Image 1: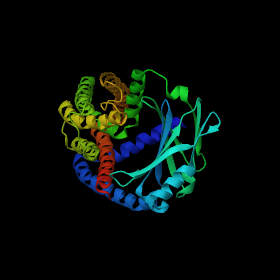
Image 2: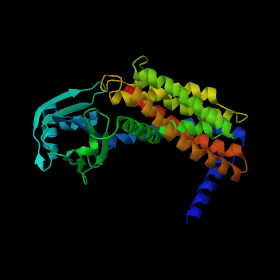
Image 3: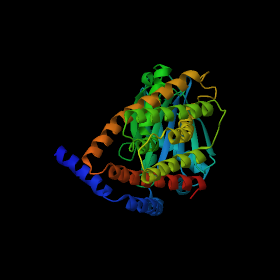
Image 4: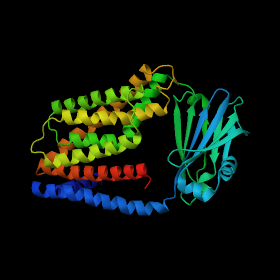
Length: 368
C-alpha cells in the first residue's frame, strides 16, 4: 500500500511537470494570479473563522502571571474592558498542587494592532504541579481554539498546548519548566523554530531543487548560514531593527522570487549570491524569536550564549532538512523524463505558497 501511495505521488508530480519550458513560463505568471484569487476567497471565508486566542503563563519566583490575548473580532463579541476583565477572571483557572489560586491584580490594555490583553497576577505559594484551565474556547464562537504557553520567569524554557472546548485544561510540572541548561534550551528553541518555520524551509527547498552537485548544495547552505547569522546578531543586539511588518512580507516575496527564477533559469548553477542576499532578510525573521525571549533586552545578562546556541539549533535543523530533501529531489529527478519538469512543478508550488503568504502578511500589516 505504501509503495502504491509513493507511486501515486510521483505520478502526480510528473503529471504536473509534463510541460515545455515555454509553457512553464506562462504558468509562472498565471500561478501568482491563481494564488492571489485563492487568497482572496480565503480572506472572505475568514470572516467566519472560529478564532484563535492566546494564554501566556509565566512562572516567577514569587508570582505567576497569566496574560489572555484576544483579537479584534472576539473583542467585539465581548464588550468593554470591564466585561473582558470579568470574562478573564471567571474563565481562567490556575491550580497549584490542588489549591486554586486567586488573582491579586488585574490590568487590561490594547496593542498597536487593536488586540486586547488582560493580565492576571497571582501570588505563588509552594507547589510543583500547575493545572491551567481556560473556558474561553467554550465562551466564544464555536470551534474557537486557544494557544496556551507556560514559561519560566527568565523565558528560557517554554511549553505549549492547544486548548479547545473539548480539551480546556492541562497540567505542567514546574520543576521541568524551570530547570535545564540555558544553552540546551536555546539550542532546542533554534531547532524547533527552523523545523516549524515553513516559509524559511520552503525558500531553502526552492533554491536546492535545481542544484545537482553536493558542492553547490554546501556552498548555497553556507551562504544562507553566514547571511542570516549576520543580521541575526545585528538585530538581536539592537544595531539593526526593522519591523516584522516589513520583514515578514519580504520573506514571502523571496520565496516567490526563487520560484519564478527557477522557471527562467537556463542552467542549474550555484546560487550562493542569491541565497546570501535573501539570507540577510531571513535572519531578521529569526531575530524576532530571540527578542520575544528577552535576549538583547537585559533579560539574561548577555547575548553571546543564547545567540550562539539558537543559531546552532537553526543550523542543525536546516542541515538535517537539506540532507533529506536533496537526495529526494535527485531521486525524483532520476525517475522523471526531464529534470526540468520536476523543478518546474515544484517551483509552481513554491510560487503559490509564497504568494499566499505575501498577500496574507501584507493584509495583516494594513489591517485588511
